[in-house]
Length: 574
Image 1 (spheres, rainbow, N blue to C red):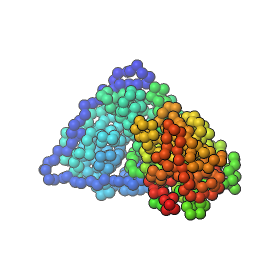
Image 2: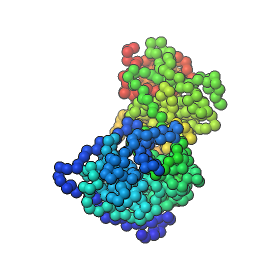
Image 3: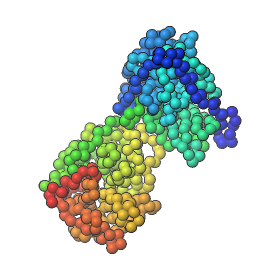
Image 4: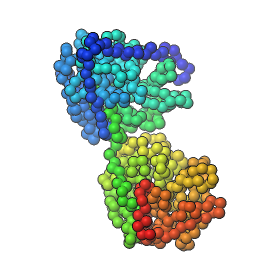
């Protein structure tokens, strides 16, 4: 072990990888081998193994609202001969979706086992008393216990057997180091070397331990400058990881804490945590993640059907600051024949605490068909939220008072308001939470960028307008001008075009809709719906042509949005 010049870093020589991993030796080529079934989750589940003082071992899942664990399986001791003592260090392999754990059998040793609802099966010998484990994306099983850190690679390729007696060879070697009581694996560039690596994270008391286990030598840090953790917690025996959203729970029942995205700073030795909810006191336990949709701490948002070709609009009535009970927020759709807006569903102010003020800059993400809007909450801030007909989920903090929003085909979200133009990439994979208090302190949006002359809602258009290949453009209307913005330049490049065919009066165009390659705008004044002839856009001449496509009623503090893959509802009137 050699000390490095960088703060709090230790460089450690790893052991030679055990190619066989203590692999199985079959006494008879056809005897003892068993098949273990995978454990799959449609929605992500926070699980744990636990053995109580009476020796009863269970697999359980955390009910995140109550913080109580619910039994999934009680594992009888007589599933092994002789009966096992306990299990720990559980993890689900991403390669075969099977539960793996460390098992102790008095007088026989420690073993890596596979578990399903009817059996345990033996895979490899272990170096004894493992109580922390996690799989990396390559299927390596990383484990930690009283003697240090070990690893077995290619675990999913190894056979499983009905008895420990089929195992031969050695347990994997151990590297001595201090870690916490469970592990989470992160892929990234946490130590800012310029390349992606594999890291193990664990907590003990208020210190976050980080081990980089890729790139030859192990690199080890103890980050002591943590914030947000309860001082009473000592042993953090449970860790969960859902696509790099990392959660820890202490055995003494202080609750679940999430590592704030982007807060881990190896150079400064710091990290911050956010309280997510309750978790009961437990003992001799180990957390493991069943990866499905989202994280267990986010609401299950229902997608829009995107099968009706609806020109949708979000609107808030009686808008004031602060908000009052007289103010209501609705999602509506435009009745094409009459030009009136009909109720789709109400977004109840009481879905948030305190009741939100308003929503705007709504858009439907084409990658998940979920409605996203920006939400204003008096005294709390502005947030990007997911919305369905019964609830909201908080995704990120955003600049205040956004009133134009749209997604491109890649799921990148563009929002514009008083402070300028911003955008957020890869929104689909971002977790959502039931409370704005669960959001971290980091900024996830790029911007805001000052752009002159943009209108009150946006459409997205992918085209070769400049003769340099296809680019993504944001289109909006203000008064009788079409604004064209290319957001991929810094600062965003923009053009102002005369909108031929638009009414000449001063207008705020608060609704825009994309339907495949057809784009429509409607002003708040009720002057009708106008379709943009996208082939007429000419940046050199500074012109674009419009035609009236339908009726629309007067509205206020509104935002239009649509499913971009839907056929235009205005086509039926042509």
